[in-house]
Length: 79
Image 1: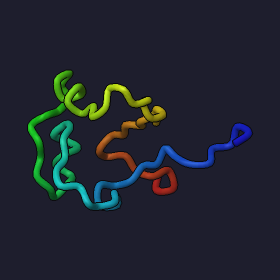
Image 2 (image 1 turned 180 degrees about the vertical axis):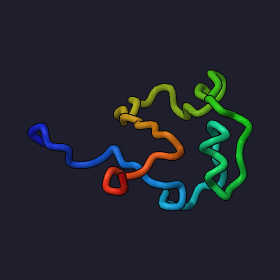
Image 3 (image 1 turned 90 degrees about the horizontal axis):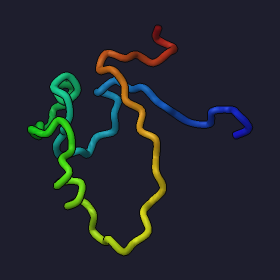
């Protein structure tokens, strides 16, 4: 720690992303990179976010930063 990055953000090609997803959602540019069914949603709806909450009494989990990347991004070592 001490101002030294220990992990991420990582940039991976779609082919290098771990598998297991049953479907993807997002922009057409991103979803086209995966060979799984594409959902129509580009952004989550307010109703979808509310429906995702299973226990309103539970303490929320810690926030995890989300790093977005361009679909054509390359790891720095390949630049």
